[in-house]
Length: 323
Image (tube, one colour):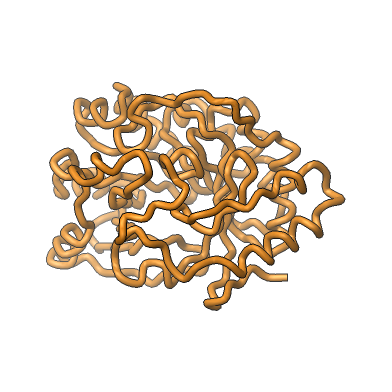
């Protein structure tokens, strides 16, 4: 059994959200901070059955997301559980970085081999304004620690915000001697962020033009790579990635699926529905039923999202499904 939709897109990459909780108050996601509700997040056992089911459907890359996934006390155990599956070549996490400095060596020992750390500004004041946390120094120290312990893939996520983002030259100076991939992500509209989006959205095409003019070259995508257009330059150890969901044909190369922390299967961050699979996660004997439900649901995956028409689907904020 393979995960192939009606548009012949092959899905080998699962983004698995393990919590909606977050301890930052990023302006583009949770400006008022995480508001606890009555929802219960998937247990370790349920998450293990999600992983087993998707591995049986050919997933080779799995990213633990949130919210802030490292807030879970069993996070290191989750990494170890995922890495036990030899079919999964990339065991990744996306994090705001607050625990990287202290714990990344434990995660690496458990099997983590890819980490994305959010750094929305290299200016302490701007970082605090955007994230609600005066943690730039600690976050950057965490990046250095991830490089020191030898995590093979260290990526930096930077959301582009008109008037708030640093100058491109600042980022280029920072990555010149660091083997990181810094990815500029276009601000995406969600159900709760329409006003913020209208004020701060800017196109990544502006940065792409500057990169090309400065001699940066577009790299070919690998089989498990995400949607970023990655540029490299012979004078820089670091690379630049651009994630531009508002660009033409962005969804053509989609290779990822999502499961939320409440046990819903999602085709897309901006889809109109989530298929409940939690009832099939209680024990491993339900694995065949789980795989069949996923395969049948995938037949309904649309060709594209509709962000250009300001249709954001069920997504209220990026922590809800795992941004």
